[in-house]
Length: 217
View 1 (tube, rainbow, N blue to C red):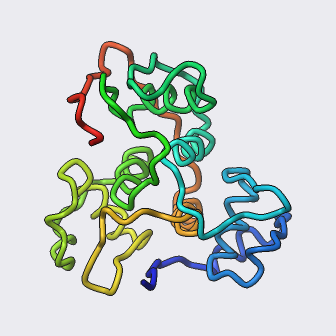
View 2: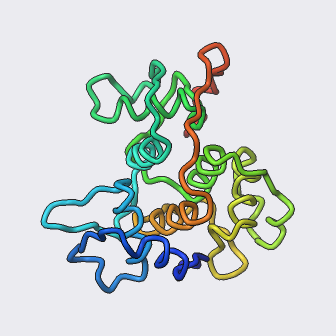
């Protein structure tokens, strides 16, 4: 299925032309190469073994949290209560930072941290972190708008309105579709070009509210 993203490659080329771009053996002829170079220069997404980026690999939730935490330079944490995230997990601190920043709602249930991140989840997190104005009116152009989670609709519309992300096959948004590393890089490249980095966000402990234990089912 063809991915449709709107991104100003000319602007990105001008903005980052003087930056060193790491050359990956598996991105040289990839459709997202320019955006991958951008996120690499910002040190947001790391390489794999043998100098590969694995652009078509689906991105896990926790890997996306790590990217967001680097993007906003998040430092503060909150105790993690998810039943499938333990202090021994290498991504525990990234989940703890996500909760403290307010883009992840804590529960006593499962987070499914290693499941792939979806398009609506990416939009909801990025829209929140960048403080974008919610927009649901524009979602009328998508035939599957009713499939977008209520909590994500406003931010999906905000990113569509800002030409950061668009739909699949023109009339569908496909909110539950999982996103690849290349697709994430493209969205991040557009945001960095348009807004630079988001400011750090911190929620005071007393304002952190727990969600239903089945929230991420």
